[in-house]
Image 1 (cartoon, one colour):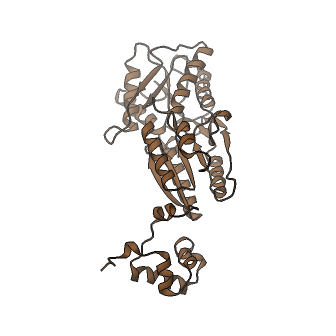
Image 2 (image 1 turned 90 degrees about the vertical axis):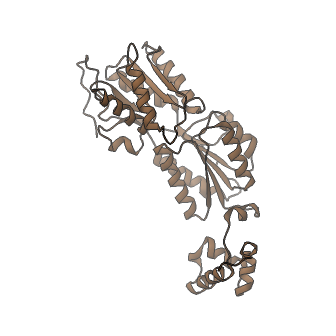
Image 3 (image 1 turned 90 degrees about the horizontal axis):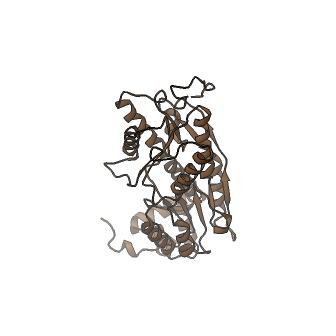
Length: 360
């Protein structure tokens, strides 16, 4: 039977019950490896006897030195974002931080509400994986200068005073377009979904138009498919990729190659292409703007823009290590990106030009 007054039991009560210090009880929770097996068992037995349950959120709110990191993620369906979340979560736990994760869906009001919640819980720091259009304004207004922050997978100008690690979206688009141009393509399309609330999507769209215009390539109604819908349980990123390819194929002058933001969307586009009796890359080349895990294992392997995700993980670890210091790291890092040539990019059928041997 559970203790009816367990909710009122504190670490101090546990310490007095077994005659140890409160610090020893705290170590049993946060650093059990630092206690002798006998002492650890004594504390754990007291937890069970008294019905004590540790509440990290309550502890964070009652302490001026929080061991809680807030992580806000924009898209739980994107493989690279999930990989980033997993890495940060595991590293933080290994270094005695608790983690509070919230999904914003790139919605403006959600981002502000989540950041306010993180502030209420006195998080030691906030990490944003994929910011919305106005996230930087909310960071400055809600977190101020007293809660360290770090935004991942996007970049900012230095005068915006936002800590970030990410590839320059301008470089990603330019490199993807030039890969297709070098292969002989002259009609290139860009497909995106739920783009209106995503900051990097706006920048990519602008760069795409500027790049095609500079290269004197067509930029018109045949060049874009924009779905302003968030994926739902019945409508995933894969489904949006299918819709994007369907709309491109229905255009008067379909492109001979497209850019796809994520691996899931890319595989959806290729799936629809196959249902129409067509194939990638023979009938439609494709370059993925994110070299997530699916890009290299899918068949055909996706030609993709790859960024230095290992460097990003390393710098995030350094940021976490610095949180408890008097001056946490200030980071403004633009990751280098390059195109990993794989099987989904080849010349259009009318071109005789051959590509260099692509790597799988």
